[in-house]
Length: 310
Ligand SMILES: Nc1ncnc2c1ncn2[C@@H]1O[C@H](COP(=O)(O)OP(=O)(O)O)[C@@H](O)[C@H]1O
Ligand SMILES: [Mg+2]
Image 1 (cartoon, helix red, strand yellow):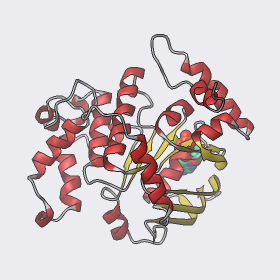
Image 2 (cartoon, helix red, strand yellow; image 1 turned 45 degrees about the horizontal axis):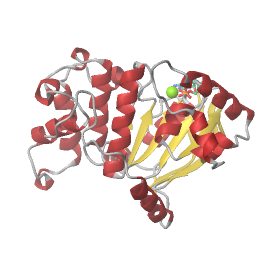
Image 3 (cartoon, protein in one colour; image 1 turned 90 degrees about the vertical axis):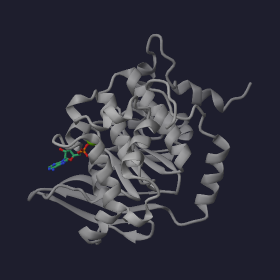
């Protein structure tokens, strides 16, 4: 098992920027990993539209942020991709994952993808985890469900303990034998990450994975996620209301406002030249939030001065 500082990263490396650039170049040559086209989602008999005509792609290994205020349609977009929309939802449009159309896929096909190639870290781990089962067993089930016994190179328990160690959880055996309520919020979110990563997915959707955690824990989890994505080469759709968090983790960003994508592009470009007034507002807010005493947060000026070398 990997030695880790409490709450620290498992590997101690900075994600390789060169590696990432190479991956991006290679990804451009292929069809996108995820292709969302004209996605609209409405709810209820009155068909109140929460998401309107949303289109975007995620390339292999790409990190795309989806940012917008509360109620703008981010979670609805994420759950539509996962095929986990509420029963009262009506969706239109196309969602292709690795060339396969998901909107018309059978439950069986979706279950095969979910938890293996396509995984999600939910905002609230307490509702996403089963309260009646130890987190070790829940994580093991993700492996049991998706990997035939014949393909397993080591016992599942060992895999789970290694995965817990990898996400910086101290004393993995003790964590594995704990129920969700026996863990802290930060530990639960690390467990969720371990579950999302254990089958080496191609795409991880993270829906505000650190919202509600205190700043220090949030910072550690983001560093961890950053490192894990770099290690595994997984693509990430990172949903957040916080542009500063997105800027830290993602290369590209979509800005969502009232169910529509109002701005899209490389993060540094969007930060430098926001076109939509809503994006300008987001940036202004993020600047104020960035001034946290005693903490070096990713400040938006970092990006803004880069364009004018001295
Ligand atoms: N099951 C549902 N039934 C009715 N309306 C819903 C449902 N789920 C989400 N909505 C509505 O869709 C809109 C977008 O919600 P959501 O995607 O959760 O926003 P956020 O950007 O904060 O994640 C909101 O107005 C919300 O009330
Ligand atoms: Mg949400």
